[in-house]
Length: 279
Length: 313
Image (cartoon, each protein chain N blue to C red):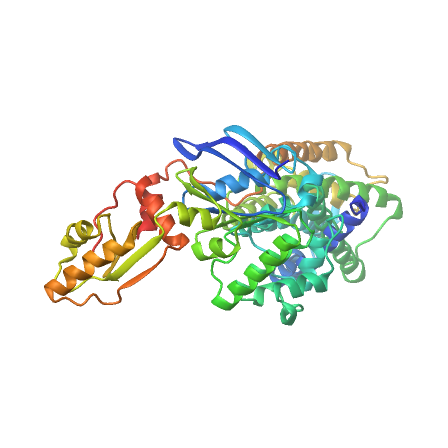
């Protein structure tokens, strides 16, 4: 009897399948890639002439927005995207169907995550290209290893957190709402839309508790002129990774492959089941 | 060794015993139908055999392994058509069949799958654009794409129009003839009668009868006498009047009166004598061999609580 297809081949096929799905859902493409680019253009049109002062030095608004929104794109391609799509597939019964096939379940999930990471990468590259060509973003080759590493830790952790949210919420409609209710307010206190170093203490504290701000700042730093190479922010990366690990534990322990309510409930009595057929 | 071997299976949800002491087996190459009303435990039992649920107690062996802990090899040898599960609507029929087929050891070629389920004309259509019946055929296609030794079909033709249903029957018959073992659940009795080598009747989580359709029909009273309730007899007196004449309990649904009878000749003589004596014409009077449906109704009647008063028109 022939062997199963190799793990590599299955991984490639699953990742490709998730990417094709993504490109065929216009609303997903718009919110994940289009909207952050649009925000970059708008913020720069509105505030692009200014500068922000940070404890370390002055940064032009253009550079601030490009780095911050690039990091935000990476988060929306992983965290928001997975927290949206995985529960949709679960509600549709697609996850349950896959579980009945010989495809190892981890490969299905890995395909989902790899595709999200690729989308994040495309989004970040688009954003940085626009930054370099239009918004005076300077790229220092010596800081690129740090940019890449920060990106890798960030997308890994936010993908895990997206899977954790997908595991915790029951239905697709509530998952979408929950993901946005988490990420949008957080973006306001995390140096994505506004520089918060001068904001009230509670806002700064709020930003510091969650992993978005450390990730955004660490990534911004790799494009900030006054931060010296190699610009690895190990503390921030460790903090983000710790959140990622927490997400991983929640995802692994709470994940369900079946639509909610598919199993018979205890409260459904035999009487009602019997009367349904005599009708 | 049987392909499916279940003994004293129990599955409890809260205080409901969804499966309550189920035992049966399926031999290689058999088409076995589990019949039962909604809530009888069919899907729960089948999902335990597929490995989706773990039993509360009891022994289950499918293809020689315990499905609850079985791995990839097991899932390569089974095909699963669930009662309701989605397919990626963004993909074409060709794409989903290739995608799912691509994770089996020895998948059927696309063209073969497509023509088996009759989706030739829709092969490049997006799944999202197909009708409910056509999507159900994709379910079938994905169930057979891996050349399963054992195919689970959970109500495979619900929602089909009559011609699509016939076509699926032909497919299931062809698979059965090919040596594929099939476990079918259905509440269409003609489907079970047509397809199954053996039938198990499930009620409240346990088997109340088992055998070939032929055996079940022969075991039960073999002849059904039916006619329309005459206007001169009120609906609530029908049971008394005709029960006494026929010597057995009757079933009423709407104006239709039915009874399963061992000795139809005498019974028909009595009832036609009564009709002639009373100057009543028994509309649509017929005497026919019992179908599986009659057997099923007789079986579930015995095992059910008396049904609530049904309104007759």
